[in-house]
Length: 148
DNA sequence: GCCAACGTTGGC
DNA sequence: GCCAACGTTGGC
Image 1 (cartoon, rainbow, N blue to C red):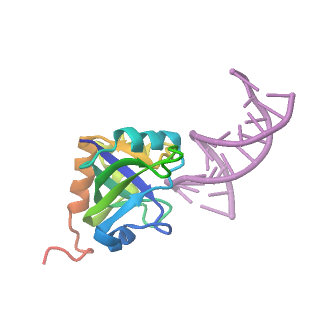
Image 2 (image 1 turned 90 degrees about the vertical axis):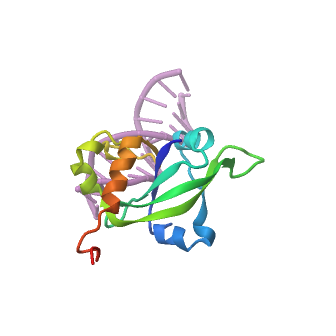
């Protein structure tokens, strides 16, 4: 069981797009970086949980959790260079966990996402980091309309 | 196999 | 829109 963070530019594919997809499931493909490819091919397993992060967005934030429902398989079986996995929307956060909120959380100090120059679009997340982000995401704020 | 040039990512 | 960081490309 591993935890991951997947980046997506919402203008290309957003959390809402994932929720709208049939069975809330989509193939995560188009990854063209070898390190990310290796994670998809070798390490991402069915049942792994994914922090879904909106990059190049306002706000920059983890907006929900998805579950891996199919492990790595080639985009083009005849070629076998690039790999994809399938993920399914599992939980939309009550509150998006913004970049600023993550930077402010001591538990997340070592997070790959927060490192300068970190551009990897598939990143490993430690169990402790995953729990900390999920806890922040589940908090309801007055602004978000919770707590009635 | 080195490395400069170039392209892309992505936060700010 | 800027630009730092990083990956890739291609000449040599």
